[in-house]
Image (tube, rainbow, N blue to C red; front, side, top):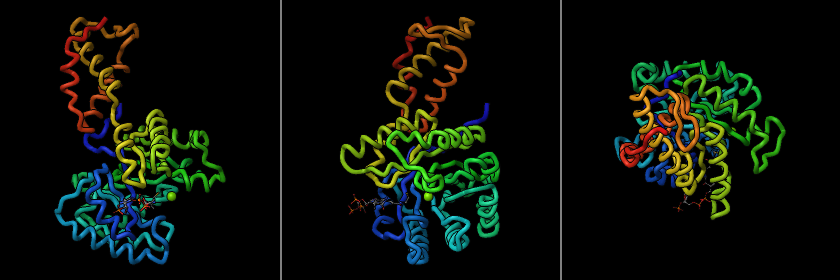
Length: 320
Ligand code: COA
Ligand code: MG
C-alpha cells in the first residue's frame, strides 16, 4: 500500500486577497491549517503589480514573528498569463513561504514551468530531499486537467496536493452548479482517486460560497460531509467564519474515534488469539476494516486529538 504523508494536515485552505492590506494583517491571527495569499482571481488586473509588492513586504516583515495558521502559501497567476513568472521570482525567495498554489494547471508542462523557475530562483528550496523544499499544490479546474490528471500527478516530486475549483470548471464545461453538486461528481472523484494513487498528502474540495449566518454554515456543513464521503481531506475557504465547521467535519468525529478505538483494541487481542477475522457488534472485522480504523487514529493524531486517551477508554473491548 502507498505510504501516507506523516505530517501535513490541510483540512482548511483559506484564501486571503493579497491586495487587501487589512486582510493580510488579519490573517496572522487566523488558525487555518493553510493560509493562501491570493494574487489570482481576487486581485483585479490593474492591482496585480501593487498586490505582489504588498505581499512581498508582508512576507518579509513576517520574519520569525508569530502566526496562528500552519502552512503559508501563495496562489500565483496561471502560468499562461504574463504575471506568473514575476509572481514566482518576486516571492519564492521568502523563507516564510511553504507552498505555491498553481491555478489552472492543464498539463504536466505547467508544473514543469514552475519547478524550473524554482530551480533557478531558489535552488536551495527546490530539492525535495532537502526537507526544506517549497511544495506545489495544483488547482484542477478544466476538462483538460481532468483528462491529464495522471501526468499532472507525476510532473514533480514537489507536488503535495490537488484542489478542485468548481466555478472555473463549471465555466469550462458550461454547466450550472446545483446544491447537490451532482454535476461535479465525476471530476471530484477523479481528483481524489488520482491524488491517492500518487500518494499526495491532500486533496482539497471546492469553495462553499456561503459563509454568513446559520443557513450559510448549514450549506457549508452539508458540502463538507459530501466532500469527506467522496475522499477529500480538506476544503478551500474564503472567510474565517468557515473554519470551525471545516475543521470539525474534516477531523474524525467522536463516533469515528470510538469505532476506531474499539476495533484497534479488540484487534490486538484477536491477533494474540490468532484470529484474522472476527466480529464486533455483529459485523465482520478483517484487514481492510482494521486498516481504516488505523487511518482514522493516524488522522486524529494529526488533528491534535489525543488518541491514546480514546484507546485507554476502550481498553476493555474484546473481539466477539
Ligand atoms: N482573510 C482574512 N480576513 C478576512 C477574510 C479573509 N479571507 N474574509 C474576511 N475577513 C475579515 C474582514 O476583513 C473583516 O475584518 P474586520 O472585522 O476587521 O472588518 C472580517 O473578516 C469580517 O468580514 P466580513 O465583513 O464578514 O466580510 P467582507 O464583506 O469584508 O468580505 C469576502 C467578504 C468574501 C469579500 C471576503 O471574505 C474575501 O475577500 N474572501 C476571499 C476571497 C478570495 O480570495 N477569493 C478567491 C479564491 S476563491
Ligand atoms: Mg479558478
